[in-house]
Length: 150
Image (cartoon, rainbow, N blue to C red; front, side, top):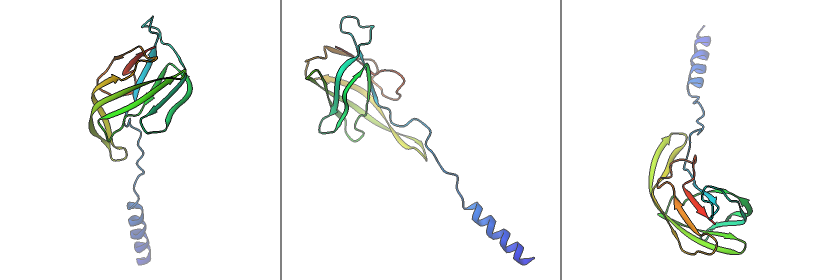
């Protein structure tokens, strides 16, 4: 009888020490969404052919792609990220500046970054004619934050 009590106490201690696995299923740090439009018809999206995109001093994110929208990560450790956009051997540079707010999501996900007061400076004008900032806060990936006309 004592042995049965000891075994049941031991098993209850073992199983009570088990913890449910935590998986992050919530949205984490959102990316900057850029949508490309026709410079002559601002309501029509326009695919960029031969698109290359890379951040200053980083690897290329998009290589020779034909896309009408892209998602770019912003640097969570800096207040500015510089991106280069190339199409048909023409390169334009954008400096994207923002303020970072760290928001606690959950124990399994940790923190995410919400980017506020977004601003974009177009340093060159080789193939990108102009930009429109649609949203100064990046807290989701549901809609485009920047419209780029070419």
